[in-house]
Image 1 (cartoon, one colour):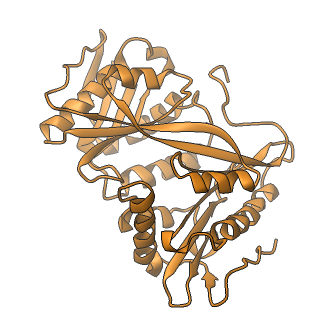
Image 2 (cartoon, one colour):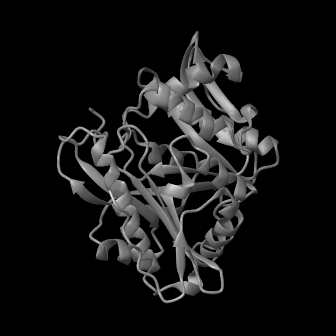
Image 3 (spheres, helix red, strand yellow):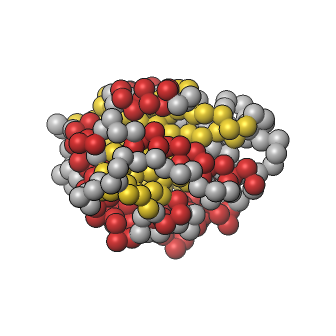
Length: 340
């Protein structure tokens, strides 16, 4: 497969990124985010953690564009190396001073071409799509997606709560108890709980343990934002019923705590465990002086998570819209309904 030849204005250059480019990339990402969203988006460490993933090679999986004066003005990445990658993810940003030059369109076309490599690794009967997304209020990007043939398929909320008093004391179902998380003892069981709890969520794709577990370890524990004292595990005897895996800081706001994962296994649902875990998480943040807490949720959650968060006092702060463009029709292997 040959690369798409990116068409650029005169004097502009393009190449794959290296680790040395992280500071300039992050500066551009955050310049974009401040203009479009009103807050910072990413840190150097967070980007580094993504780029050193086993399933990502920056020099091959990204393209960065420079203006004639050497300013980094646009970026795109394509995630294509995971097993069962039937929906390769495309993510990009452009410096707001360099809009309307066709950079976003050209980089997306390059990423689409890169994404076609997954066809060589997948069963020919499977449905394959490009996927990308953006905050709902960034209308020019939404228009670009639609002009390039993408269709809106799903939306996700960032929900927040601001605590001006201690949150309610959790009420635990009979037989359910919290125990301190111990990484060496509990990490694999927590991963398996996370996988089971989210196996009936829209878009879930089963991954082999030898792929999924190392990826979970890398993205959740090998990061500056990992604090095992903010991992809360609800046990029923010697079985995990549910988990709340929190981070001390949100990407967008260092003063906001973040509930990265909240999940309850099927056999323990409808017993108030998710609400109790959420309230306990709020309480622990409150004790640490954190008054604002956030999380992300599918607006069409198959398990009714949005209603739970509203019940806990959270409100919608922003909306992220996901789009797709079909590469090949066929059998859809990602979860589409709760019965799958």
